[in-house]
Picture (cartoon, one colour):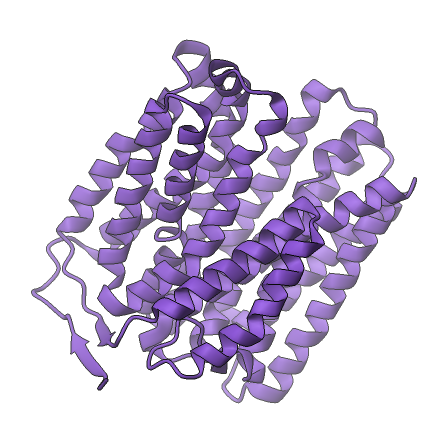
Length: 449
C-alpha cells in the first residue's frame, strides 16, 4: 500500500502556544497526582470490596502493565492521527477509567477502571513530551521539556497529601471522580487548538501491536512477579516480533531504532535512568526504617526531599541542556546520581546526612529522567516519528523502573548488607551510563554541544 503524507496544518491557533503547553502539563499533573493519590485510600478501597490486603498491589500492578503496553501504541497513533487528537483520546479514556473505578461494584470492575486509566495515561505522558519537543525550536526545547518534570514532580509530591485529605472528608470514590471535571476542562481548552503537524497515512500494523503487547506483558509481569516463565515467553516472542515487523509497511516496532548505535545508546540510557530512579526512591522509606530506625509512620516523608529535588532539577536540567548541550547535562545527572548512591552505600548513619544525600540523589535523578534524553532522541530521529520516539523512550524507562525493584528486593532478601549491594549496583549502572553517553558524545555527534 502506498504511503501518503498528509499535512494537517490548519487555521491559525485560537489559543497561544503557552496556554496549549500549560494544558498538556495539566494532563501530566493529573496523571502524576493519580499515582500517589491512591495510596492513602487503598485500605478503604480494599475494605469496601471486602478483599484481602494481598490484592492491594494489583491496583498498582495492573496500572503499570497496561500503561507500558499502551505507550508504544498510542505514541505511534499520535504520528498517524496527530498529537492533539491522541492527547484528547488519552484524556477521555483516563476520565472514563476514573469513572469506572469510582462506580465499581466489585474489585475486578475496580481493576478494570485502573487498567482503562493506564491506557489513557499512555496517551498523556509521552505525547506531552512529543508535543513540546516538536513545537519548540531546539534552542528553547530543553527549558520547555523541563516543565514536564515540574508538573510530574508537583503531582507526585501532592498526591499522597491530596489523597489523605479527600479520604478524611469524603468517600474514597472522590479520588477518582475529581479527575472528571479536570479532564473536561482540559478537553475544552485543547479543542480550541489548531495544530500544525504532518502525519503519515499507512496501513495499521495489527499483528505487530498484538505481538508487542504480549511481549511487553510477558516480560514486565514476569519481572514484577518474579515468574521466569513469563519472562521467557516474552523473550522468545522477540525474534518472532522482529520477523513480523520487517514485513510491515508501517511497523509498530521500528527495527532501525535498535540497530543504529545512536538510538540504542539513548534507549539504554533511558532504561538505566528508570532503574537508577527505582532503586533509590522505592527503597528509601524501608532504608530509613531498617538502617536509621525511623518510625514507620514517618518513613514515607523521606521521599519528599527526593521529589522536591527532582522537580527542581527537571527545570534546571532543561535550562542547562539548552545552554551547554543535552549530552553534557545527562552525564552530569548520572555523575550526581552516582555520588548519591555511593554515599548511601557507604557513609549514611544519621537522619540529617540521609536527608541531604537523598536531596542530592533526587537532583541527579531529576536530570536523567528529564529533558536531556528527550532532546537527544529528537536529534537522531525523523521528526515525523516524534511521538513514536518519545514512546520508546518512556517504555524503556518504564521497563527499567520495573527491573529496579526486582533487583533491590533480591539483594535485600538475600544479604544482610542488601542495601549496600543495592546502592553499589545503582552506582555501577550510573558509571556504565556515563561511559556509554560519553562514547556516543565523542564519536557520533558532530554538532556543537
